Image (tube, rainbow over all chains, first blue to last red; front, side, top):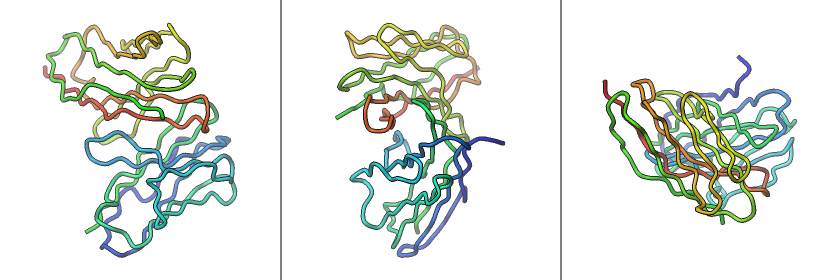
Length: 111
Length: 113
């Protein structure tokens, strides 16, 4: 399968714990995006990378959130000291042009 | 900033009925417009796109025309099937800022046999 893959698909954690999600984009795609989707809403932009450079961060991305793409390939999104409001689906997408290809998402539940 | 507004659902239809989902946008410059679909338990998939005014995107019997004068990109299908039951998202990609997508809130469509 050469699509965008995300891991883990589901994560249940207790409030205050740290969690990390991984995204493997389609190879040769230079842009990688993170979105958050809550129930019944459209995806909201969090951040994006061009190669290894993080070029934009949404104001939704509080100080507890950090994203990296160290070698311009896979990316990680870490959430520190999780809160119940962080419960959502975290989507990763990659692109070479204006068309974004999405992974199936990582669902986070914070108890 | 950029924004997308689409009709709220759920939209419930019978098989073979005509489907329209309205979408309007606000953007500077000349954005590209997209419809993405999310089937139950699956990720977002691109359904169709249009990159300039008066372009018509089409796929799987769905169509949408980029109307700059009315800033709209309404999705239509002439005869829906049960398998079209999904959530549909209208989105735009601006000229700047890395082609990130701005999404509407989504419209859930349920097609009954």
